[in-house]
Image (cartoon, rainbow, N blue to C red):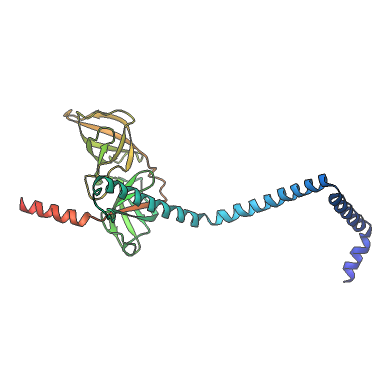
Length: 274
């Protein structure tokens, strides 16, 4: 207590000046509308800056939550989009439609892209209704196909895998081919077995063909970077620049075709009869 008193006595002149200055400012602001408006504006500017900074800090620490919310919204929108397309094209005469495709979101926890046969590991497994042979995509394009599944995790055969073969087509003409990887460039895959009669041009868009139960038709893959006829000159060998940056994957969507079992059983029965 004595120290506080000593400080007050030592700086009494300065403290008196400060008190008088604050009183003069107070009376000036109260008695003059111009000064009052300037003070209010300054106070608002200062408090606004403080609140903005606090909000930025809060937003940074909540980015994970916001990302999860966006992923969930995108999952629902994609599910609605593909099921709406299917409703219009296939189920337009029905009153009730439950949807052909279901989408799940997952986080990438390991991503190989420098090998010849690359795999991706996801934090999603059987407890999340994930099974083998489901398609995996991002908001930009395809990623691969689910290979193995445990309770909490799953592995994906990346499109950057020499064993990967995915049905794809030229968006403009509808001509089909098989998507493969030659193990060289992580940005480039090949579309092979496209007939030489197909009109191909640099920059053409390549999409999934929809001729399997894994990927719906119309999911983006990439664009034609260059092409040539093979040795027999019957088919094109087309290089595709991927929409996805396969070296930088964070979150993905997994697609489940709810009609898959029925289709496969029917096709198996047809094959047995032949």
